Amino acid sequence: MKVLILNGSPRVNGDTRSILNKVKERFSNDTIFNEFDAYKENIKPCIDCRYCNKNKGCSQKDRMDIILNDDYDVLIIASPVYLSNVTPPLFSIITRLNFIWANKYFLGITQEFKKKKGILILAGGGNGAPDIAIDLAKNAFEKLNADFSLDNNYIYSLNTDTIPVNEDKELDNQIDKTMKKIYEKN
Image 1 (tube, rainbow, N blue to C red):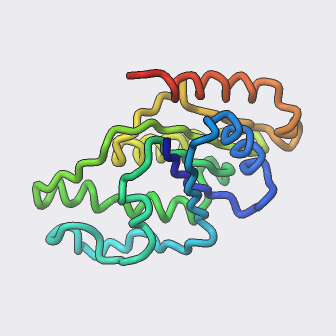
Image 2: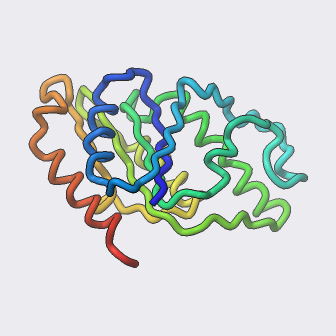
């Protein structure tokens, strides 16, 4: 099994990393992980240049091909929650998926991505209102043909300012439930 992780955390040893490590431990030993660090990759956001209205693909050439190569079975989107959303570099990456919609709408070109499974991991303090982040992730999963359900594929630790991730007793249950769904046959 191949897993692509879109990591939107700026902190190498933060809460998002702690959750990711717990999730990675639950995959089988032969799993191949490819982690895409949104802060290191420096992917520019969609610039609304309209290239994709008239041409297949995106005008910006960078490492987005790692996502678009579509050679993975599971897509993990992981981020701290900033103002109810994913972090800005991860947001930029997701905006670049706009060409998929534009190619279909303006050119009638449907980009076919293989069926995969999606996992959303969010961590954050405060009141833990991740609604915008969830909606954005749902959109990305849909564009990349990843099955995702809030009930089965969403792992979160919110209010981390009062309950540290390593003390969040519900987290292991969420991970177990998600991993059961990941290994379930369709």
